Length: 214
Image (cartoon, rainbow, N blue to C red; front, side, top):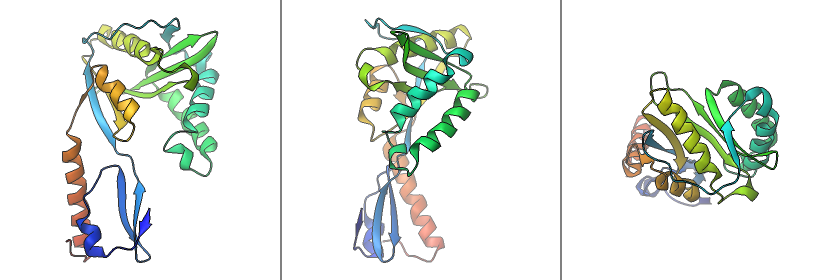
């Protein structure tokens, strides 16, 4: 989004954490920059029951790798932030290879001998483990598969003595945010406070560059 706007007025625009505010060639330029909302969920909180017929089990890297990589590539190449890239497939192949190889563990939902959903978990040594790459095949959504993955993961974490699961989503991703909040996740920090901090940092950077904030 580009439009004519003075530096002073650009500085006065209300800041939203999902947008980058810049001035290029004399124009104000606003571009999407999704900032993650960090969420946390106690592992002892019950997960809602689902009626899905899919088989939910732990991710087996030696057996599930190819099917999960194909699911991630097919799904995320049409989603932000990858769909705006010049070569989303190339970036995704590189990222899935790295992330599948470094996941601490995960879960898959299998239906009709095909992997329909996956969720991976990372970290947890010095902080709460993080739910990541939660992906459901487009034709299998709204069937409780993601909730089934969450149930298996939280049960496994609880058995390991881990009391909390972290996750993240964008404020712009309404379906994902709604799913997290309805499954017991709570915001770890107020997004409005995050936006104000981002605006303050931007103002301080302009001060250092010799631009007086409005």
